[in-house]
Image 1 (cartoon, chains in turn red, purple, green):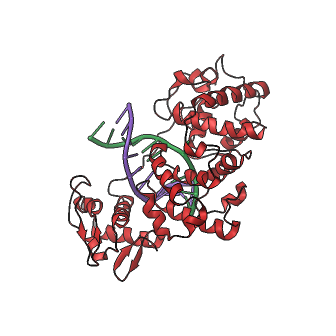
Image 2: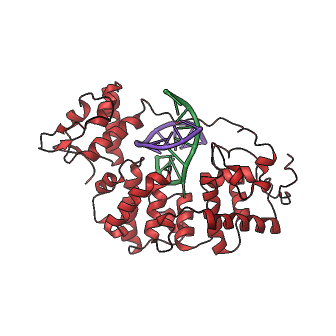
Image 3: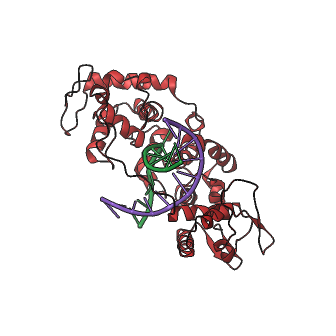
Length: 343
DNA sequence: AAACCGTGGCC
DNA sequence: TGGCCAAGGTT
């Protein structure tokens, strides 16, 4: 590959991946973090006064979920549950209910479980090291490194989808990173890290932000990129991706059915009888005047979401399978009076 | 380790 | 319009 004349020379090949060395790397750090200082979005979890708990909550909520949808929910959560102990004092169903429509509601379940573990094993304080954080439910390699770095100022190599894409383009000259994180990628990320802890935190945040707002997956805003002259992908003429990402199926899947069931449970103020849940009347879209189901217990439920499934003719078999899965996952419970969020 | 797990905005 | 995509984790 010919990186072209404005590209940092590939001077280190110990990992098989070209990496800039000393002065060039320092320059990269400076330019990206300087850009970040001006361009960073002001987000509440980036405020210096934000608690580690606030940062942990934000990281979990941001998993596979855009900032704009997380913001209002995060604000409500932090007001309602300012510490892990506050969340831990409530049933897990409360976490699922207030998760709203963020998606992947078992993140709410795991965050609640993490709060329990933090209270039980860490005296109510968020663990400060990557290894300790990794033991918490719902906290994987990315989140553990991110919390250690952003909440505690530690020098951790943070690798998320944004950072992977920036590295793939800037250093690798390809449009997209590999389908799954490779060891070569991880080594490159480690090699690119500033030695200084404080700078490393800003570098992690800055590269992530660069990927989120400039070096985006679909239509990157290369004109506004602070390191366009160093980009191997641009130098190579912005070649197309070498593979076709496999899409996420949705219509007709169990995921859709599970989502609809949880939506009904979330909006219901009482347990919903299993029979009612499985045979709700058809009301195609979730739009229009909010219809209401009267529950035998005297409460109400909004059947819209589930009705959509009947409109799609989801087989009863699938409804049953989805519900069984939700019960097994702890996202729902069956009581004498019906199905409800966990207590 | 490939598959599964929600949701909504965007081009 | 609909497929793509988003600060991943778990099994």
